[in-house]
Image 1: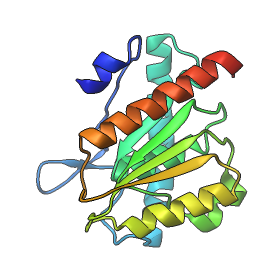
Image 2 (image 1 turned 180 degrees about the horizontal axis):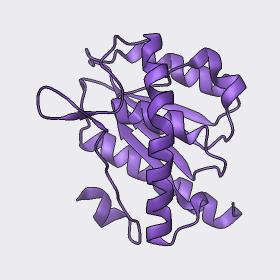
Image 3 (image 1 turned 45 degrees about the vertical axis):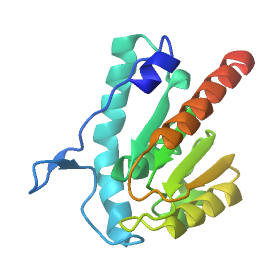
Length: 183
């Protein structure tokens, strides 16, 4: 609700991951420990399906691919980063909550686009520790991606009102920049 009221003329689509979990949810990648190489392999495996979904949504909404922003939480953040850096048309922005970059050692050989990136992460996150965000920011910056990391004090593996506000400001800024400078 917060984002819909602060961002007019924005289409929000929130797909579930393709794999059902035992607890009734869905996942994008298998449940592996942070830094596990299987996270990257799983992201690579599901990426074509998600690219197709994104392209179909862009067509359905009548939007140019340059107007796309990818936002994700946890595994969704992993996928937003993985996909956003490999799309042929650079997205307007990538925003990740409580997730990070997988396959950092492969990034320089696979990066296709360099959208602005913001990673927001709870300092008390026990599921996806903060060091993953810090390592992601470092790897992205070294790859020439304009990236900022925002640790939120006292926050665990969640998105709170502050995280939503900072994320909305980042997205609005990215859209305004894209509008002014084209692309």
